[in-house]
Length: 576
Image 1 (cartoon, rainbow, N blue to C red):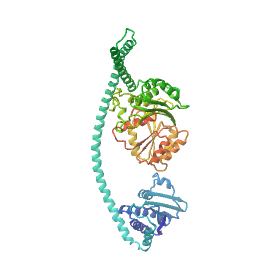
Image 2: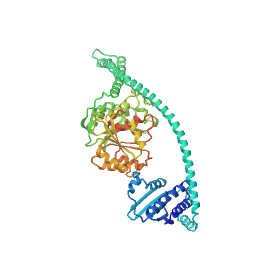
Image 3: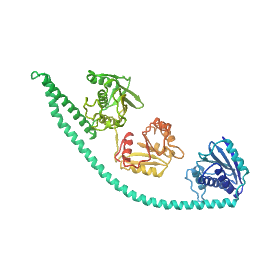
Image 4: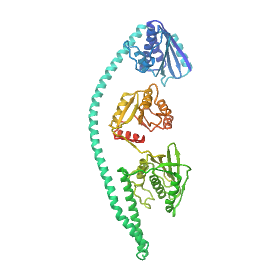
């Protein structure tokens, strides 16, 4: 729907003032508020004056198009040189040329200017207010009213413009005072934040020392416990095998109790030792080539004794031609723990174990028809020594360490673990692991990691650089998408932080170019944006295999932890 409201010819200087007045009239009739009326009138005035001064006159057309007021200012002058540089803010002129164009662009919702020899057209767009009724009849009526309405006196228009300027100056002065007050408050706040961070650093150091002491204690004590436990298990086995004579029924019962208790304690000690090793970084990864089908066959044999007195059907969906190169023992340990848990809390029904390939990962699934887990407990189950209360808990005493160990082992292999569950329906545990284990790359002071930040906002780049401040990191900056693509090709960074909303090439377009180029398609990309993403936009980023999507709201105390986690997902272990 295109409805032409009015056309103003600009041949003399007073026509510029007339175009401004007509702009305000039209904006008022279309329901714009006073501030928007002034913005529209000022933008039209600036571009009309350009047409008069540099284009020997021109024409201003007011059109309603697709729920927006579209104003086209055209002239037949010599055209504008360096129009792209002017719009990008890179053009400097001693005469002030281009400032009016930049100002008008900021005042409108959309601004497009096309300039060739002997013709320049600027298209200014302002979206109509929501309360404005959008019907052809109403706009035709406005066009008729404008045709009949006599333009305001030029002196009155100039006087009104001066009054607007005075009001604007008063507002600016008021805002300047408010800004000074806020800056004073911010300085006080900053001093408080510095003190708080110093305190947090002290506490973090204390927590780190406490964690290291706990790890050493668990590791040492676990080894100390193993010797007497092994002795108890061996002696109880000798008694049960009657090697030193017969046992009566009561003695056999007592020895079985001893052995069962020792086995439970041995399980706790083994889990503690495994967790202590992971936390101390002493776990060795031994990657090797194997088939997932062979792993499933081995698990069947290991778990068969647990099914002898069970009403549960354990099903392995055998995958075909699904190779992996990782630590088979660690993968087996994760799945054993998940299946054992499922057997404990599934009185009857089925447990199904499956695997499938998704891009460069293998997704293992352990699904049961057991008692399920309450939504509030889904994260608690991955905490050490936490056991959820349920009727079956009394039958199966556990350590509360199996699932935390599974999560740590999965992360150690470069993967993750997740759970979905519904009470009285069952649970689905999903383990996602890379098809090929890649050792985490350690940064070294001699060879710093290159991190490229592509963002048009100076403050966003500065804040992100502060979070990335480290001797092992070299930050490279690009102020727009085009420059970012070029620097990615030339610098070959290890990771890229990419904003989505930028002039020229958007972040989505930059991502497409990076993934289409053989020299940059392997570089991990982390989206760093303040944009509220629509579902289709999020899907588009996921399909482009971005590592993570971060909000620019990273002023929380755990910001460094979040950055470290996403860098770890990108395969980089950095001390920041």
